[in-house]
Length: 269
Image 1 (cartoon, rainbow, N blue to C red):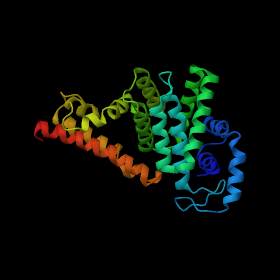
Image 2: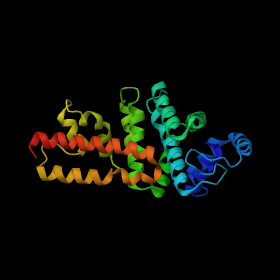
Image 3: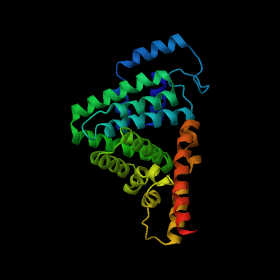
């Protein structure tokens, strides 16, 4: 995937002169020349999704994917450095995500963008960079659906969990981003407990956390909470982002159903 497509996809979705538009320009920087020369050599070759890979030639479907990717990288840079460390396992998860969903070329390009974002965070300092993230989230919120933002938040939670533990600083950062995106702290708690809440041998309290309710909730409250979760997280709502991202949403949706089944079984529902 050529850098030109990242620009075309991101700028096709982000308003001119916006915070995210500025970040696109900052992150791409001197990579433009390489992108143009690469596109000239490749001509009108087809991308892995059958779309033309010339600069600015993205289709709406691909614009959604590329914009989702760029948003994930911007917000990942905040989560990865939330505890003051850049963990290899967290970076490796991002590499694997890029490789699997966007191809091998996207790995080096995405990593370059992340490194530029880390440098920007260093230049701006923690408070100014937090404001940059807040403004970026406001733009993401304006251009995406609730379900797309929930899937974006889910990826950030997975990145935070990649090293086997989620630090208090990462939890705070995740909840800040959730708030900026128009989501809730409860959405973060639910995602943090997905795997443990779905496991048959796990703590049943984690299953309640997945649905965002307490063990003292009534049966009707549990059923209502599940219906709300199922509606919010249905994978059909992110189908425009591609089959691979839809499959990740399906996995999350299945874990929500598994947590519900554990609670229903424990209560004899």
